[in-house]
Length: 421
Length: 56
Image 1 (cartoon, each protein chain N blue to C red):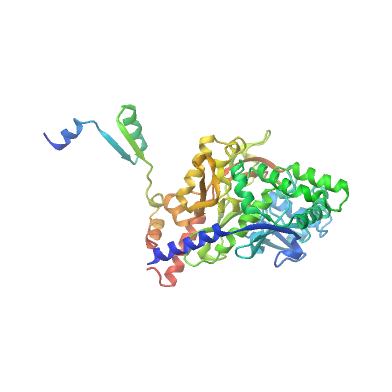
Image 2 (image 1 turned 60 degrees about the vertical axis):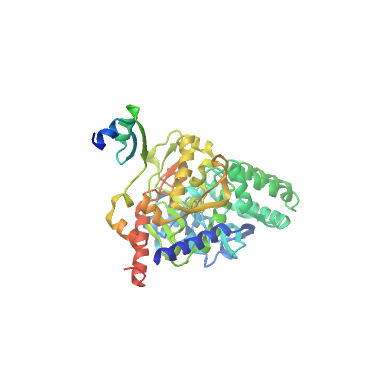
C-alpha cells in the first residue's frame, strides 16, 4: 500500500531531522570551503534565478559582491559584468549554503562551517553584517564594502582563532536553550547572540590579535542582535539536508525565496524546485515606509521554519509580535496551527508556554494541500530598491501553488513507477 | 408526539459544521453550541482532492 510506504518514509525523514547534531566547527572562506565555487560564481538566496529577473535588493547585493571581489570597480562595471553572462549565478542551496535576505556569497567571503555530526554533512553561511546599509539588503556603497573587508580581515580571523581555542560549539543545544529564552530563531536572536558571546568572549581575549581588533570584534557582535541568525540558518540547513532523496517522503526539506519567487523542495522529489511568485509581506513598517516600498519575500532564512523554528516557534517568543505585528494570542495560535501540517513535535525545541510542547516539525505537502493551512514565516521586509535596507518586518506564507505543484509531481512520479493508478 | 417535537421540547445542544453564522446566531440565543472548524479537503479543489485520494 502506497499510504504505508509514504508513512514509513516520512517517519524516517523526520527522524533524520530530529537526530541531527549541528555543531559549529570553524570559519572558512566560500572559495575554499563551499563545493563548486569559482572566482566568478555569485551565490544568491532562494531558487535559481537569472540576472534579468532579479529584484532590486538582490541586484544591489550582486553589484556589491562584484565590487567587493574586485571584479568591478563601480556600479556601472558591475551591471555590465552581471549582464555579460560571464558570472555564474546559483542558489546558495546548491552549494550546501544558506544566506539571509539577498544571500549573496562570493569567493573571498568568510563563512561559518557547521557540521551535522550524525550524518557527517556540512552547511555554510556568511557572517551577519548587522543592520542599516548592508549587502544582504542590496546596499553596495563604500561603507558596505569597507565593512565586508573588515569582516574578512579582522572579524573572521579573530573568531576563527577563538574557535580553535574554544573547540566546537554544539548548536543544537544552544538553539534549544534560546527557544527557552525568548528567541524563535528567525527574527529574534537576542538570546542566541548573547549565548554565543558568552561562549566566545573568553577565547577572543586569549587570541594574539591587537587589543583594538579584539575590542572591535566584541563590540560588533554586541551591536547586532541578529549575529546568531547566521548560525541558526546553517544549523537548520545541515539538519534538513539528510532528508533529501528519501523515496516516498512528502516532507519539505527546503523553503527559500529569491525576492522574485518562493521555492520549496520535497524529500521524495530530490533536487527539484517548485516555485511561484513570492508574496508581499504583511507586517509593521518602520517610520516613513509603507507596503508600497516593500520588495516581495526574500531570503533563505525560511530554512528556520522548515526545521521547526521561526514562525513555528513564535509562541516561545511572544514579544516578537511588537516587531512583526499581531497579538500575543496570534503568536500562540500560529505555533499551534502548525501542528496541523507537520509530521511530529520537535524533541529539542520546546515551547514553555505550551507546557514545553516541541515545536511543529516536518512540513508535509499532503497536509498543507489537504487542510489549506500554509506554513507561517516571520521575516524582515526589504525595500524594493537596492541599498535602502530593511523597511519593516512581518508575517508571510508561501504560495499554495508550490505545494500543489509538488503534490502533482509526486503523484506523477508514482504513476510513472506504477505505484498508483 | 413525533420524535422531532420531542427533540425541541428538550434543551437543544448543537454541533455546527459549515457556516459560522449559524453558530453565532445560536450563541446569541444562548443555545449550547460548538462550532467545528471544518473545511472541505483541499478547500474543495477537486483536482487536488483526487491527487490526495490516490495516496491514501
